Image (tube, rainbow, N blue to C red; front, side, top):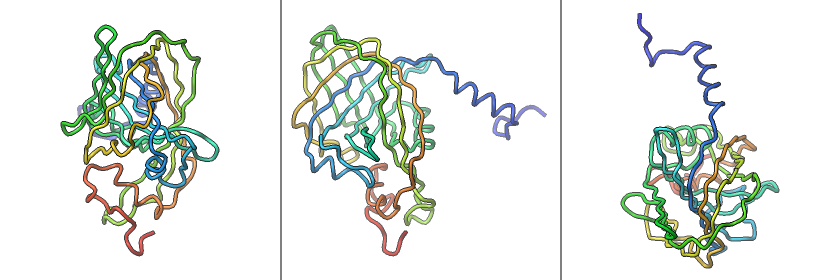
Length: 265
């Protein structure tokens, strides 16, 4: 019988797939990063426990084009500064991706809040424009002009925080205890330039980043970098405490209750 591709893989096939994914070469991306100071109360309001504010109400937009061979990818995120267990990092609220293939692993393995969207990074001479859009709304746009080259930073480590969970089949609570994931990224930069410009936030009921207003732009850069990542579960979290926040993951708040249902765990 010919091989049925939906059929079970043998141990050798599983091991080969795991080995191949572990030997990926450096994949470089060209991206714009904008960091701004926002309203402290707004930043604190979007952080599910046990995440806490850092004392700096910062928001970070990362908008990139990734050089995947034969499979160019637009990837972005909007995240707020957060702290957990003495570790400072970023809590992403939305991560638009231009292809479904980029969604699956991140959502299912790490709990990343990835959604299909449009990602644009454009440069013409010194003029730079980058945006994240969904449902026809460019809810984040970064505009400016390159001001000059910046010193290349050394290899850096950045931590992102994710909540991994499964909404309950009956629509009430979760099917299992949610977990908090620390995703550690090792970054190498080969080109970096400063950008003088601004950040525009547009109203979207699906991606309400406009609730995190730009009080002051801290920095805008454009550069080329490569990143690897590894994640680990650091703790199980209180389902009752997390439940009011999980609408962040979905476009339709009615998909799951905005607050803990009575008597849920």
